[in-house]
Image (tube, rainbow, N blue to C red; front, top):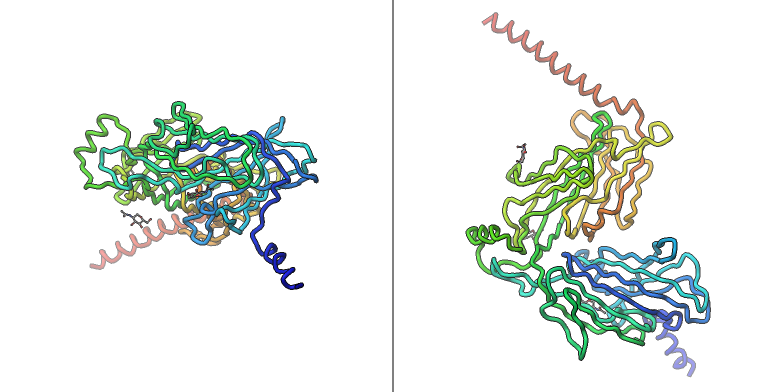
Length: 470
Ligand SMILES: *[C@@H]1O[C@H](CO)[C@@H](O)[C@H](O)[C@H]1NC(C)=O
Ligand SMILES: *[C@@H]1O[C@H](CO)[C@@H](O)[C@H](O)[C@H]1NC(C)=O
Ligand SMILES: *[C@@H]1O[C@H](CO)[C@@H](O)[C@H](O)[C@H]1NC(C)=O
């Protein structure tokens, strides 16, 4: 008797956790799914009211478990997830943790901490923004060279929320034209230009979702950078910050059914038609950029152009060949900046702070893997590394280059699953460098040059003496 009585309780204890749906009620949930880029951006805003019996200092949302599969790194597609509390004087980012457990709807709960608890009957305004990479698939998977590319997005017409929702609506935005095929229900959705609206729906029970599929025209490349190696070389003696970035890029759009025809390609380019092949990409660089270069396996690629707007210089580069779906292209971009633009000496002498964007790559790109290396001068000692982007591993190593004795200090940051929008994240490296160490290298270079020079003179003398003997 006792054991059977205990059994259900045990089962409950073992079953997956579900947030108590009575704690909160969600009002006016407005969600926008943005399909204008090569990755999916989802932004929502809603009112969260404490309709429970006690003050609450945290609440729950949920993410699709298929976006966070950490078993296989390439299927962890969630590139960004940001929850903010909106108030009259701006917004505050909230800390969150994504639960490991997957519930029966293949979702994972996200626990969000509030800076101060919400009293019973009170409400707050919450904003949620996320980005998911490698989620859009071309349909059909293969197309002819001059054919238009279509993509498919799958999701739910109602946002999955663990609380009852009084009213909600989902808008889906496209860049070029209205969707050409989508899930339909009675009067739902409505179309207005390039926006598809599902809802509004009223009084939706917790954990509701309803799968939908949307097919739309997207005649642009899906730029996926499978690997980026970004190096920032700090030189105090030269007063220079050199940036070099090596890219391994693939176009994850629709592949070609036939062989590539250059004749047809030239005709398309002449007519200025849009194409799902990557023919040019843009990179926004920081003011004061100089000595920009673009090379690939073959050598210098002459088809790059720097639009040198003072505030926003833009590098437009054209790969050596149009990169169609399934094709790869690897290349290197590099440039210089005066060190003073990125490095400041702090109030304490010999202590410097480097401040650079985390990424500076092509617009509208997704990144599978990125390593950012900051190469500090010989003898520099790293005091702190900080970034507004936290999801990175950090490593300190040394690197020896020609004429180095002590070795350069290298800060290596590695991250996965990002988008070009991570460029907004900054990276700070605080380091100590004595004046002595700053001049060590040039003196050594001068000594080395002198030694070589002297050796040549000596050899010359020897040579002369030999020729005399001969
Ligand atoms: C989760 O993602 C999968 C794959 O994209 C999709 O089929 C499913 O409908 C999504 N679930 C929800 C609740 O959005
Ligand atoms: C590479 O090409 C660019 C653009 O044509 C040119 O300005 C530059 O001098 C070239 N660099 C080298 C090293 O050949
Ligand atoms: C492109 O690169 C990937 C590895 O990143 C490789 O698996 C694939 O075979 C390459 N594709 C082509 C067409 O070379």
